Length: 255
Image: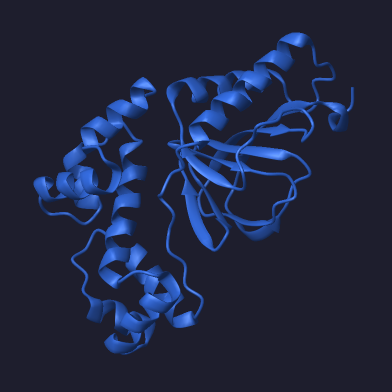
């Protein structure tokens, strides 16, 4: 059986950093990183996918992909006629331990396996249904994007200095805009204020750091720009509905 005839298969590969490129696939793509993270842009939003998250990309969807650090991809591609009752459009969702284990297990069926028996068929259908159910609660950890060069400079500067006590004046100087113009650009291009954007970026950074079980929560707070653990806990609960400890336990136990 050729690769084109396989109803589903796993694509497992290490990638070095690579520049932005626009891609589309003739199969439904369950995109997941075992190690590192991949950056995606679609539907006017940017996403960074560490092992805490996966993305469902429908066949023929155009998206921009770029990799800033070495990463290992363990993704699954489904022939469109193999499964039904799928998520509508692109969806990013939180992974559970069950879904992660299933994707790891799928590595036994690579693109060159040659055969696809009833065991493989039932397994991949179960994996698709598991991820479809997870996708019913999409993640909200998208990163704001700007359209103008000034806005892009502002967002890049903010992301690079999340761990610092930055002010609007610092961002405006980096963007080469007046503070008044920058405030207007945030409202027009991002749909939120600079402070709301800063908080979102810090929370997304925290979510990424919390996926490393070895990093203490107090260090996650500091690296995310919070000098107070209590302030970090409060902000994270408002953003995710969980305290950092609860969020980490939720990932570990596959809630």
